[in-house]
Each structure stands twice: as structure tokens, then as C-alpha cells.
Length: 248
Image 1 (spheres, rainbow, N blue to C red):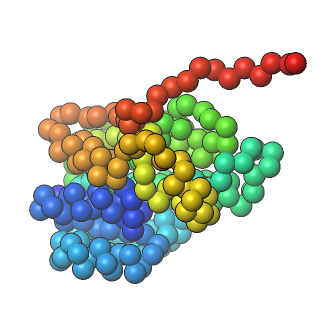
Image 2 (image 1 turned 90 degrees about the vertical axis):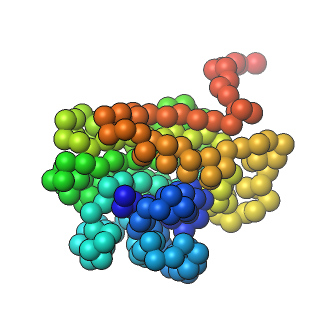
């Protein structure tokens, strides 16, 4: 298979790329940090084609796909992994630039790549779009505001995309991880390593390899099987009671 993985410079994306390479597939790995991509390409060999790409740039997305080497050009599996969370401030206190960046990456970037890749899948009568959502798309928490909203979009977009593509040989799946230890919190806290590490203190969170294994399992089901949505959390994480603010 030819697999396109966005956001492959770290965390889930890098682990997903490695998982498919290990099994003998070809991977187009994209991300903004060129030096990270070069290191991944050196590690994985000639079956990984690295392309520096910001998914927020629609023209760059389209140019990247049209310029792929022939061996990589027919994308069988698209893994829309590129995304981020920024900050945990309440809605009335947050930085609008953070909101815009999350929308541009988590929603518009995913849209651009999906729209560019799916016509080829439909034409060939085969393909699989795997989107990385989050439990935050279904369950709210303080400070989750726009991040949770973007992941709710991913959830609903995946379901609607599936409705559009039914019977065309193209599958659509959405994976919704809970607490997972990657660079996610480091980005959310603007590089504050101590604050990021405190999120995982005393826990055994999901790992990038856990998510990569889930993606690989979904992608390798028989062609007639479509996994719609998978929600997964570490054993140490669960759901809580409703918050009720009472007057004194």
C-alpha cells in the first residue's frame, strides 16, 4: 500500500509511518519540520518519501500530491494526523490567534488534504481515509473550547464523508484517543516541559505506538469491513460526574 501520513515529524504521525514501513508498505510522510522528516527518511529508507508541508496551505497540498514520484502517487491510505491544541484558557480569556491556528490546522488542513486525495481513491475504486480525532470531540472539559470543537468537526465530517463515499470502495474511519503522552502537551503549553510532564504524572497514558497499532489494524481489515469510529483511553482515565456550580 501507499500511505500518506500528515504531521509525521513526531508523536502519532512518526509512529504510524514507522509501523507501515515495518510491514513493507510505502509511506509519504509530511510535516512542517524538515529536519525531523530528513531524520525519519534516513531511518526508514527508500520506501519513505518525506515532503515538507504545512497542511494549512491549500496550494502547497495540491502541489505536493501532483508532484509525487510515480511509485508513491496512488494513495491507498490517507492518515489525517496533523493537528494541535493550544492553551487551556477559558473562552473569554483565550488568544484568538490560538483559536484560528487550531481551526486552520485541525479543520481546514484536514479538509484540504482529504479533498485532494479522495478523487483518486474514487477513480481507482479503493482507498481508506483515517482521521485522528479525540475524545475531546465528544466529551467537553474546561479550556477545551475550540480544540474540542475542531475534533467534533472531525467526528461529524468522518461520518458524512463515509455517507458520500458509500459503495465506491473507499472506507472512512475516525480514531478518538484519550490521554496519550507525545509532544501534544508540550505544544499546548508553549514548550513548558514541566507543565507538560505534570499532565502524565502518576499515570500510564497511551503511547504513540498504541495509536499506530490501532491505525494499522483498521487499515488492514478486509476490504468489505469499515471501522467507523474507535474511542480509546488508558485504563487510568475514565469519565466523571457533571460539574454543578452551587451558590454559597
